[in-house]
Length: 116
Length: 112
Image (tube, rainbow over all chains, first blue to last red; front, side, top):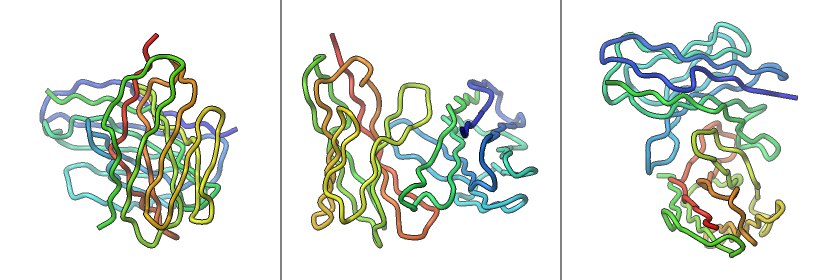
């Protein structure tokens, strides 16, 4: 069966510090991978998606970046965190597109990031 | 602009009672609509999916309906249990696209 691991679960970082959140998927090959941010009272916001190794598409201009060094590994990074980067970050995968009938998004359990 | 509006924002019900959540959307071209359940501090999990040709879908005590003409969907929870306390998110997808439109969710609190 497929599983998705996301860590850490919580993180408190000072403004200006770097960030690295990691997500790995098991049990499936060549998944589409996604990073979302969830703010209180708002819908999930797509930050990045990837259809293959090294292929990253950015949806929102910001000081975050993503990388996919391996087929089932997706990393969210920042060189210098801002206060506005605080939020709940969710990694997800789908095979194939999430608009397909039998292809829901499978989410990790998220990382609660607080920038102080 | 593709949008998904959910109501109410939150609700409190007593254990054993029923409730209905609403979702209105303006998404085109429509592919399908899913309801997700998100427990506090966890990632969302898919409950149901419906295309334009399906007007009802059940998953245990959860029943979703879809009216593609009026672009409305509802999620009905029957005989609520404490474990139903969660946020319920309506998600609409565009045909052949990776992007999804998310509602802000309805937070349901079930009290004993």
